[in-house]
Length: 308
Image 1 (tube, rainbow, N blue to C red):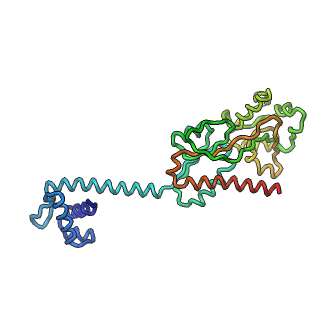
Image 2 (cartoon, rainbow, N blue to C red):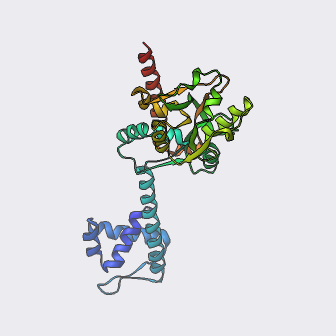
Image 3 (cartoon, helix red, strand yellow):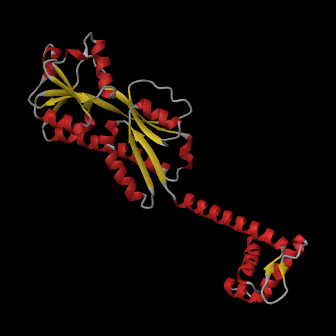
């Protein structure tokens, strides 16, 4: 039975007569009467007491009244819920801190300008292990990992992005790379970095072990939560850091910081765009992926132009 029959019956019960119900529903009185008769013939029960001028529901009519109210309430809730799902555009994205500092602001800005009706945008910074756990648990729909380990990505879908170049960074006045024994000078410096578990620090420790050295040989180690403090400290000329080259591009262009590689060190780490099967329910997932890919494509073109 169509819901308008139930709406008509309830309006008759609420107003007490066909005339008022017809006016309220903006239909003719004959239409109201025809709908009530149809319902009574369908159920084979009299639903209204027609004694007097005020119509009241019979015992059968009260049952129909109760169920009709429940049905129409559920229908309104269903319609409202579907509208919210249709109109709601959201994205949950996670990335490692370096990507968050060096690339996410530009991608986020482009995304907001291209998706003006997005209602919820959540960004999380974490290490690769935490991000992968969040993807598998459905807390994130998409992520970018910077990593040198080969993780078991299981059923997750991946797109390879350009590798990240991780370099030693010092004040411009230091030229450690040209020394015969760079480690002798390197370990005299304060090592600036992020806390234990930082991917760059883990890569540095792996590199040092490969050449028979240890991170504890540095004169001092100072850990900070943010890259800005690390870079400001480096600019003061009293330390060294092992960072993504993308983080210091502007400082390098201005001649404020110097970056270099060391022979025998692995300076490249992978950068992978990862997304779970929940992304198929995300209305803006594909456009965000396109922005990430376009972001790195434009950077590659910029690098080619700079060389040329």
